[in-house]
Length: 346
Image (tube, rainbow, N blue to C red):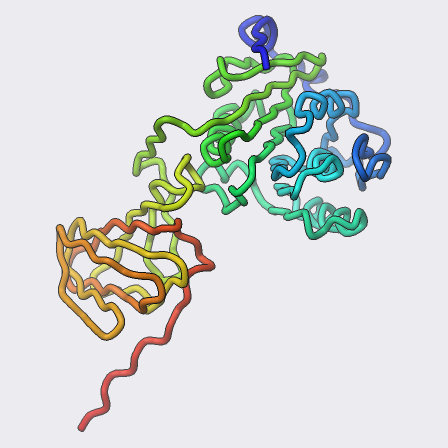
């Protein structure tokens, strides 16, 4: 696809006017305009919380996407009525993921999917999608994505950094051959887009469409300070450094884990995942099945799939270790086991 830079770059930097930031709200519920569900109306309440994309803009967008939509995963980041996700499924997408921050609207999306008879193809994520920039949820990476980014236009001016971070996180997480489509207003400075030279532009005043494809990144660099700690199913505090959720890596993950003095992970095993622990600092007792051994800085421990294991911090300082998983870590592959009772007194 040729690249057009005449519009959407430095040529349109006028500030948005308060009464022109968004087009007039649709008076009628949006309809699906192509594919098997063509003509179906979508539930819509003109309450100011959703801004359905104009039919004209949506039609041009899907003309640009073309046959790439067939068999893909549609990711609608600011779903609202779900017009983009439902349109994608109607035109042959294998499934759609819809993120929606307003919980009543998220409930309506689920109802609409049932009314359309495609509830088995639609997954709704309620909550603030901007947080995905810090930690992407686990999405299907076995097929390319088409990612739709169509938030309220004011967000491009008031929360520019957060929206751009979300776009970049999706680029890193998406499988090679995916497409990212952004709808902004013509006052948005497209120079803010990550790797601006990779984007094509289609002006549809007052809307602007920006599209780019993704490929395997030659280098993903993630710094420890940019990761968000979370607690795994086994009870350790983790910072995921590299995985399919934030990079081009697909079949393994690397994380830093920490345990307070005297703390231990809940005994557990992984059905599919093999692990390696590498101790950075501190001392611990490592138990694998029935064997327990002391470990310390510089030790690497192999943990095959299906093996019950736990690690206990035996030192006075925090235990810090790296954990690699192949395939990448997933909560649903972690199976907790009861701790063994101490031997009875003789």
